[in-house]
Image 1 (tube, rainbow, N blue to C red):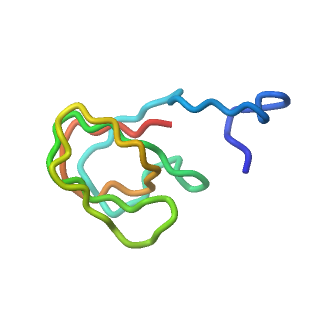
Image 2: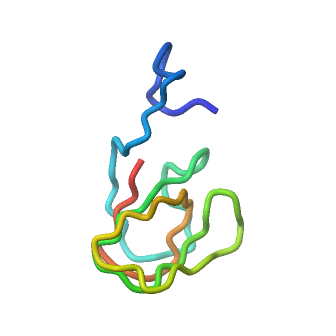
Length: 90
């Protein structure tokens, strides 16, 4: 699968760190924009129980007691609920 923005030799050496971030409003079952082909990681500013749908699934999962200031190293397509000041990292 091609990663958006990579061309030529860069395709063989994809970056593993985020290169873009989008602030998410309130949690929703709506798909996070830009995750149609690949999920994104999340930064949780204010934690709690975080409910998401992961890239390889169509059902939600809840991560409990996520601390403030956590980078979630999982690929998600939907942020359903929990926490605040959440950023989608691409």
